[in-house]
Each structure stands twice: as structure tokens, then as C-alpha cells.
Length: 419
Image (cartoon, rainbow, N blue to C red; front, side):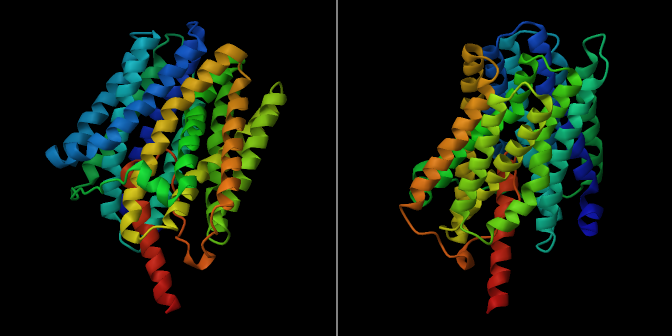
């Protein structure tokens, strides 16, 4: 662990600062949109736009890096992020914010791809798993910390947009000044969704559903909090609760997944998350209850991302794992685009509590489909399953491939030890 920190501290510090800026913008837009009288459906389009840009960049950025190099792509996209964060208050209307969110989603994905390829290059086979774990912890920590910035007084109306812009700008310095080698960039060609569905229907359907659930947490949770007139301290704690849950239970659930039938764990986690969301729908008047509900939903749903990838890997040859993961990432992105739109429409038609109701419905659908899939084929033996690698739904294609490389290497080492 110390070796990883010594070689990658600048990158990890820079990414933490960047995640603070990224985590704050969604919550801040929800607050300002509510104050400006934007309807829930309009805000859902704004929130969904981020994931549209993210999905486009996941396909475009690799070609950009191969054409002009890591440093230029990183600096160019990072500068655009900083500029867009300041532009939000200049054009306070849903159309402008939606276009800006597409751009900022595109840029953040490109920055992640670039930074994660550097991280992969700096890590050895022995430290790659630790590096990836630290990176995911840094991402979650940055998002959690960002919610505290909502409490900073902002009489001018500009300060809370300027602060994340400055943090993003500062984040480039430790990364660009300390990282000298620029790694060769290679990305696998993804399998089609049809091909992946033939291998693991549960993983594809699960990723589509999970994309909507993650988008609800990352974007619409702040919209919900503003709709029920939470105070800023309450909103910051509520949004953070989803990520605290994910951070706390990611590793324990990953450890369990390597020792049981993964479908059973997927079903149990989805059921617990669905019941928690239903409880939030029924008893949403209690703020303490909502914090607990957010924690449980985050703890159950976020680790499902890595779990569904690991389950698909159980039926794949090692050479096909990165390609399949890229396809599953695309499926998750499609769900993330649609999720806020559906929730925003439901909130506008049925009230804020529809936020929890739809999350409960989505997780319940995953439970039902998981139970159905258990009747269609037997589970692979625990000894033959692939290793679980820590990933979050915010991961870029590079982080997914790094995780797959680590999982493959771990499996190979285990086979050698067994032999």
C-alpha cells in the first residue's frame, strides 16, 4: 500500500480534488434549479445529460488519446471542466445547463480515462489491485467531501460555482508536474450487447437497471432533497449517505461474492435495497430514516456493478473479459441516461416520494429476473468463478480494464498455487 502511495500520491490527490468538484456540481444545480423554479422533469433532463456525455466520451476518448497523447487530452478536457463550472450561473436555464452537463460529462470521462491509464502504467502486477482499490476509495471520498461544501455561505451566488472550478484547476498541477512517462494506450473492442446477453443475460439486464439506480443517486437524490425542502445541511448528509454506504460495504460484499453463488448474493442485495427504498417511500417524513435508507441503498446497489461484471466473467475466457466489461459499461450508461428522465417525470406527476418508489421497483425487477435466471441454468462452482475486483458505477473503460487485468492475474496466481 505504501509503495502505491509513494508512486501515485500526486495522481490520487489530484483525482480527489477533481471528484470534490464533480460531486458538488450535481447537488448545487439541484439547489439552484429548485430556487429558480425549474420543474422536476426539466432537472431530470439536466442530470441525465451528464451520463449522455460520459457515454459518448467512453467511446471517443481512446481515439483522442492515440491521436494527440495523454497530456494534451488531459489538459484540454480539464480546462473545459473548469470553464463549464463557472458558466453554469451565467446561463441559468435548463437548456443551457443540459448542454453544459453533456460537455462536462464528456470531459470528466475523458479525464478519468487518461488518469486511470497513468495509474495502470505506474502500478506493477503486484500492486495493481491495491492501486485500483485506493483509486476507488479516493473517488468515493471526494464525492462525500464535496457535499460539505454546500454549507459554505454564498451571498453572491457565484462562490459555490467558483470553488469547484478552482479545485479542478488545482488538481491538474500535482498530476501534470509529477507524472512524466506517458503510457501506450490500448483499448479492447467491446462485444455487442447481444453477444454479452447470450453469455450472461443477468449481467446485461442488471447493468441496464443498475445504471438507472446509480443515476438516481448521483443526480436525482439532490433533486429529491430539494423537492422535499431539506435544509442544506440535511441535503448534504442525505446525498453523502449513499456513497458512505457504498464505501463501507464494497469490500465485505466483494469478499462474500467470491465464496457463494453470485446470483443469490445479487438477489439478496437487490431485495434489501428494494425494501429500504420502499421504507423511504412509506416513511419519508423522518430525516433520520432517510439517512439510513440512503446508506442501505448505496451499500447494496453500488457493489452490484462489480458483482455483475464478476458474474459475467464466470462464463468467459480471460481474453474476452475486457471486451465484455466494456459492453456492460455501455449498457450501464444507457440505463443511467434513462433513469433520471423516468424519475423526474414520476416526481413531477406523483410527487417527490416517487424517487424511492422507482428505485424500489427497479431493484425488485432485478430480484425477479435473478430468480428467473436461477431456473434456467446451474451456477458455476465457487472454485471456477472469477475473482471480484472493486469497481464503482463511476468507473471509466480504463478502470474496468485494469480491474479485469487484476482479476485475470489473480485467478492465474490462484491456479498456480493450487497446482
